[in-house]
Length: 293
Image (cartoon, rainbow, N blue to C red; front, side, top):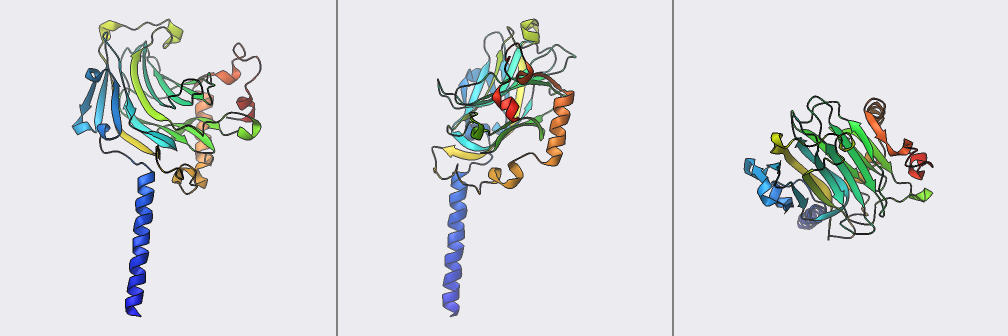
């Protein structure tokens, strides 16, 4: 009996081990270094690894900007990075952190774009959501701190229920899954993770009125603590539909009461543009705005 009990326990422990191994192979977690999970996509000479690859510096000068991307695409999960943005007179620069399906016509995309400023003016962050090829859903907020003084955490949570953009765990944007009302929602296409630092002074700062001052170049942005938790694609097809993934849990299907209060605070005090209320662009309010964002 003792031997049978031992063998049963051994088989059970082996089963638990294999379950843990299967879960860990289907859900990606934080990489140790930049190069473990990302690669340079644009101007290798303008991206410098720091601290043994645990942090990087992006450089923008008159010769080039630069960019990087994840080695894999992901379907649902959470992505976050700590970023220290371009300091001082950064007008005309754009630092972008986004997810993109890399498809031409029916694109899904979730955007953070940090729009440079003149010294002393607030930094503006623009978010946008593309679903099934339709975008033009811009919202802008002025950050309530100087994002160039130290690192801050910027995250995108994406599950079957909603997409949430976070700044230091404070939700600044929510895009709900309202497919039941005929509103597109990104859920079929995996997306890669991208970031770029580039010059866009034809639109970035005060609608292009403020031009980049190249005498202040080079411009630097810094990244660290790359955190990806999601279903890598290609990978097990069951991962994305697994309701046991932590990001699909009840606590993540809607904002908590504390998050909802913080979200309202951001929108009431720091939002400077919302496409939902722009009647010059949308005389008829877009359906997702009526349904609730």
